[in-house]
Length: 68
Image 1 (cartoon, rainbow, N blue to C red):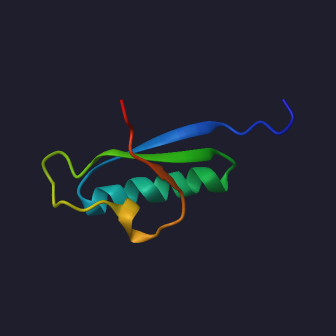
Image 2 (spheres, rainbow, N blue to C red):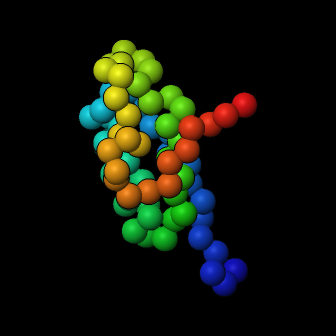
Image 3 (cartoon, rainbow, N blue to C red):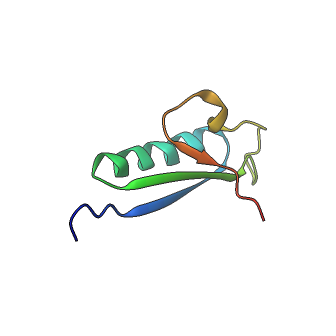
């Protein structure tokens, strides 16, 4: 298929450091041609909840909070 770009959803979760690592993996995927969407609905949940999300830091990428 001409112009096909795989679509990937990266689910950001746990603390700030883990989210940053997950975001970097998504950036790599974008670099090799994937269309990446970062889902922040689980950000800050889990054992390392520090109440921060990288979506608020102005990093490049398309971020969304899943609704419904």
